[in-house]
Length: 125
Figure 1 (tube, rainbow, N blue to C red):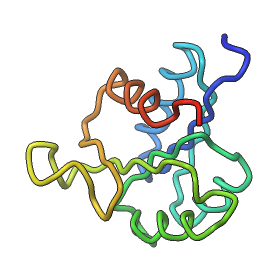
Figure 2 (cartoon, one colour):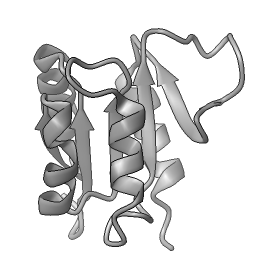
Figure 3 (cartoon, helix red, strand yellow):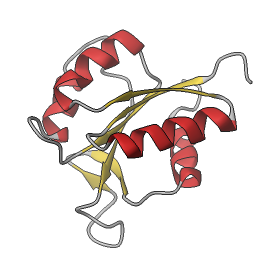
């Protein structure tokens, strides 16, 4: 495992999805993954975990991913962290590559796609 594994925060109300992603990424090496299945806790989880990148579901009960992203963006300690939306409501074939100024991946999403996305958005600053 590399000395500095990438820290990934996955926020999605589907715990089956976050669990699978965590297990798969951590097994492949080079990643430490924290799951958060309650969108209202996402900002606190991000502050606590200090992730290198955040994958964020858009449609969640209680709070929508756009609000969570805005909350995270407005925090000076997190404003630099890339946020990638995960969504089943927009396919990558429709529209652009962004939702509300954030890149997105369409569900279902492959682990290879997620890894590529992590590498692309977490190059050394």
